[in-house]
Length: 552
Image (cartoon, rainbow, N blue to C red):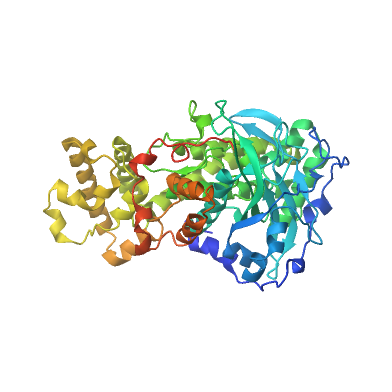
């Protein structure tokens, strides 16, 4: 698959499925729990779990479940009708008050590196997998509730989630999918009718917030850390069982597990991870918490905590208050962190392969995979037929040097760049100010544009238009191509925060409006033009609108 053919990526998941008239018609095939060793202790108490891939645990019933929103597209994947999704039974099931026939709830055991340090056992501390369904197209989907109560892996936490973080996860999962970014999905967002105490900024000022649950959907929620925990403990038999299950279930095209197949599997994980990071960089997404326990073995974006989209282009920006000092997970560092995380996975599966050199070779190839994908991506963002190293390395380097010099909105800049017509002879004679006029809405503080800055930017634009003109692409075609990879709408943090503010006042209208908006991020949507503007000044430093904490 081409790294950049977003529509080719998302189309298979949109295949219509036959709608189920009742939830009981869902067909469960719980291969994970069937194939892998379970924790023999059925008590739901915090503890170290050894020799097992999961612990059986039921969701905690809540007082007054209430549906806030659901994704019709994800419902369609599962074969659920609109009527079913709007039923009380749906709300009860996907808030955790009722189990369907065939559900076998469990929490997964895994470890991970957090901010570069080994954290030991982590696990599903506030996520409970309900089971795996197989839809009418033979696609396998794991259903998972986030915020449905404590598990043996909750450590000192309560296993719950609040509306604030749940709105963000629900909307972002679907926004990323429609942008063409590999991601887990979100079926539903519900309220529990109960309050949860949270200290949003860990500053000694906790407050009660509405409790909520998100139903997440993915072919698998297995992470890099799922393998790390067993390697760290020397539980090689469990490590092999998990690897064999993963290959047979999620990578069956690779063949029966063997040392050679384990290596090919690692190669594919590296390729998928590179593809995912290229897409993040394409749309300006910053994950914020790229710990190894938050890295999907399928190359999907997973665990939407303190995330954000670049507004002013700043490669050093991180949305995570916990990461503010070290900026380990800043935007420009994401490709390198992905490689570091892949190296930790390589260390974990090394016993299955027995040789260091092949694994190191694959890790080295990741750099080339990513670089090639990034070059293809940038050439498409700029509207070129293909990347030309003779000219484009220098052209792109100069652009990325210019963008951070003043506050420049990344999304708006690339979208507006498509308006410039390299075949318009009048542009050759215009001054710097007129040449830059279509881009001015991208600048947060236009007064920052000194004469030297305007001259440097205009010089770059002339070089860019000359380079684009060499491809002989008619301007309408070039603009259409650029607009297909440069979104007009992204889920800016302030937009999600406005939806949260309303939802906490029992008004869910903006959640629904934003869900509708992000379904068509590349379309003009004239009636939604306000959402395509720069972040408003009032949101510059407001909590929830810029940086965020891990609190949820």
